Length: 214
Image 1 (cartoon, helix red, strand yellow):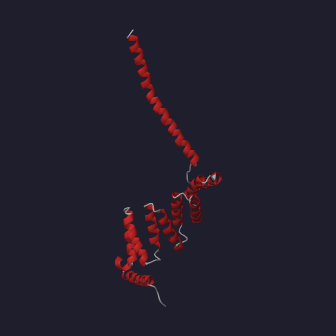
Image 2 (cartoon, one colour):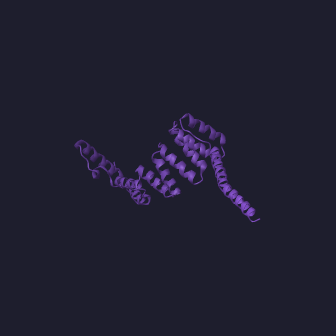
Image 3 (cartoon, helix red, strand yellow):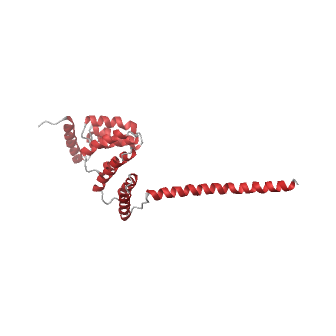
């Protein structure tokens, strides 16, 4: 039976790792392949928010091992941080083909689609995440916000009620907008009241000055 180079490397790596476990010691160089080492380095760069520097390492890792699942997820995350949204969606889609049961990637896909104005797609991906995490109240709250953007007020209300039952405190988008408008009015009134005493003092001064001139 013939194996590809990536498969051979994984087999050799597994054998070496097993030998290390038996011996009780295993240098990192023996435990991971070149592609896995590049992914590890990319993660370290991402922790330092050096997303642009992580991408070439992940490109190389994927070139060496096209089945290295985490490389697609991490590259998608880096591109999302760099606001290369369409490229991020492409990487997340490739990751989904390899790992269709990871709710995190569906949440990321929902966010990227929402950020690019594709609200219907954002709802669809968040719904898939909810199938895998039905007790996650925050996901219901997030989907409620998306439903609000689509004008689906009834669906938004249902999701918020579910979120509350799961222990997540939520406020309807319309209520939030109302609070913002109240703050604006209060700020405007405070500004007016701050000017008023000055105007009154000025008027009183003018009257006194006028009386003295007679």
